[in-house]
Length: 236
Image 1 (cartoon, rainbow, N blue to C red):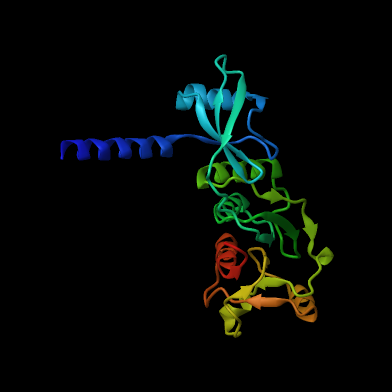
Image 2 (tube, rainbow, N blue to C red):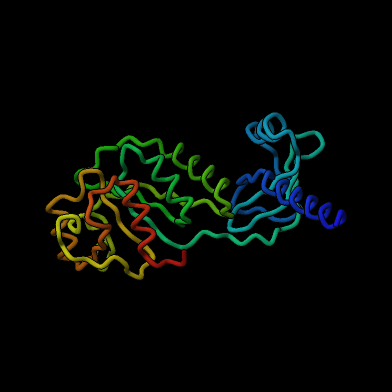
């Protein structure tokens, strides 16, 4: 009985230690036995904040055991772990909003593969710091157990999108229009806080784009994006 309790305690301690191992995105081309110069941020985080040298490095869909060198200046990549990347293959097209940072955080945790900002007629958030958004995506990937970081593409204009067969979050469902709640697809478009304009709805309808309903209430844009992702089938 005592031995059994001791083994249980040891197993619990191992699990706790595994959960506490930091996960750090390195790049998309890491391989076993690589030696990579450690950035100041990583040296500070591991040495001063976490006070440890071992961590999990990831990128390109894979995760590796890794550690800081004895002098703390280099990252030494070890063996690949058995952890499978939980991210899917969904592409999110979205109109930048005031809380784009929250949207990026949420959809990254949901496993989105690619994020494409779309400038619509009612888009008001035109001065987004995309370098900061990429950093938020990296941090969300580290926290959520992904082995990859979603690509954030350069913004495109709504008028430049190929709308034929596109699936989009249709706020007209909140005003009584009957729409499907699930569609099998790999991508979805979500509009800004003010929704799509009449001319944009006309363009979507003319191109036979398929709207999906997100319920009978008007949702915040960042929440609409998360619900739209949950309602499409893309491998998640």
